[in-house]
Amino acid sequence: MKASLKKALLLLPVIYGIFLTSVCATVLGYVLSTSITKDKYLSEFALEHEELTDKIEKRLHVYEQVLWSGVALFNSSERVSREEWKVFASIVDINTHWPGIQALGFAIPLQPNELEAHEKTVHQEGFAGYAIYPNNSRDFYTSIYYIEPFDWRNQRAFGYDMWSNPTRQYAMKAAMLTGEARASGAITLAQETASDTQKGFLIYTPVYKDPNLLNRGMVKSLKNLKGWVYAPFRMNDFMLPIIDRVAPTTSITISDITPASDSNQTQQTSNSRLFEHLNPSPLNAITHNKELHVFGRLWKISLTAPAFNPVTHLTPATLVLFFAGLIADALLLLILIHNRNNQLSTNNIFKERYKQLLLTLNQRTTDIETLKKEKEILENNVDTLQEWLQERELRINELKMNQKDV
Image (cartoon, rainbow, N blue to C red; front, top):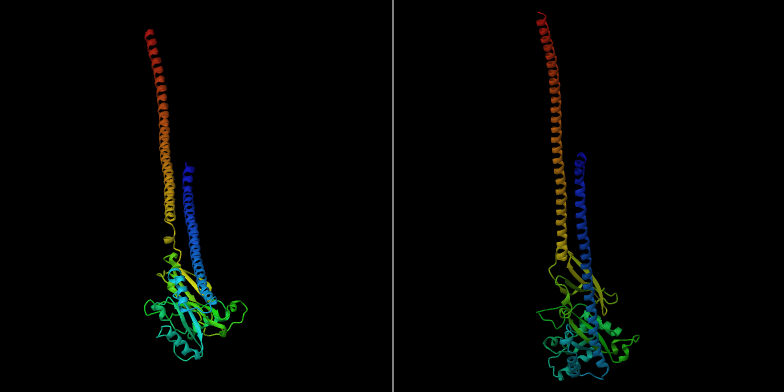
């Protein structure tokens, strides 16, 4: 019985050991599930970033082909009239097929001595208010000569000298010297008004007097240039169709981080913000940055999302299983303790019964001893009685003998 009690007492650390092992298994399962879910969340975030960057890159290169088709139009004709450019732009239909492109334009280079004759020619075409601006004196000019669609917003850019702006000039010069498409840094387009102002950029493709100059290795210079086919982009309009599948909690920023060129300090330097799509910023957030080369520029595309939070990102089933596991662990502990208590209770009952048996046995032993003593006394009394009877019988016999003699 002592061994059983000792065994029951030894069960207590075993019970808690089983309980702790079960809890550890439940917590380990939760930690592993959380780790897997977190890795999946981060992988999906990285994939989202990769897909967004890929979409931007692909769309830009597709849009580049629109500009080269304009270059092809000029290279295949002796002269492209304003009406022909309008027809070309209407067929391309940027408003329907190429969201983000504000216009398709053609800009021409002009020497100072060519300005007056050029403006007079455009006036004769029916644009009496046409004038190249800004109108300050410069060594070299350009003019937005054709621009479509010729709506109220694009008319604001008609006649604008993009060469007068260092950011635009750098891209125009790079396109002219390389024979490749080149993008400008972040700018505010000439088409912008006081309302719904957006950041933008431009892409330029060169048109040479001799189309063969487009071949690599050919020396290119301003004297060989006919002009630039270009497209201005309003960045919000360009990005909105791309970010439609981005998670609603994700914030996006795009910055031009092109380093300044030692040979041309007019190039924009770092951190010119092009685009922002901001959501409420959580206290804990993760940010991924990717760099994208865009026609001679370097963009940094940053995505920010809430950091992984088990409460919000774990599936309900995982949380239910975790808490169900803890409840099961608690029930297991209760069952084990209940069984131990039952065993202790049984041992106590056995102990009490054992005590009662000992008491009964002791009482029986005492009773037997008492009976033995009483038996001895009784036996002694019987012996004494027998002796007395024998003595009495002898006396009687003596008396009888005496009477006979008389």
